[in-house]
Length: 66
Image 1 (cartoon, rainbow, N blue to C red):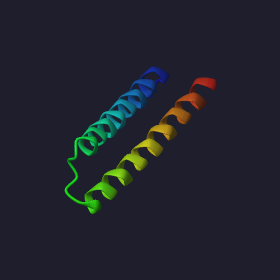
Image 2: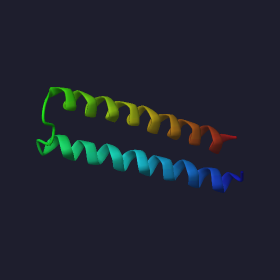
Image 3: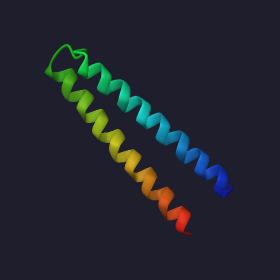
Image 4: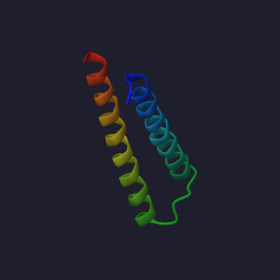
């Protein structure tokens, strides 16, 4: 895979992760969680997506340096 294609793939994944985090954050902020269990699940998903996004950004930085 070319460097340009890799960058496009990483960017597309980052946008997808960020959009999903924003949707969940909006859902929570508007009182969309019906109970603490759903709230905890949403927080866990957001934490996981934030971790994955950070890993993508770090990978992209490493690829840019190489």
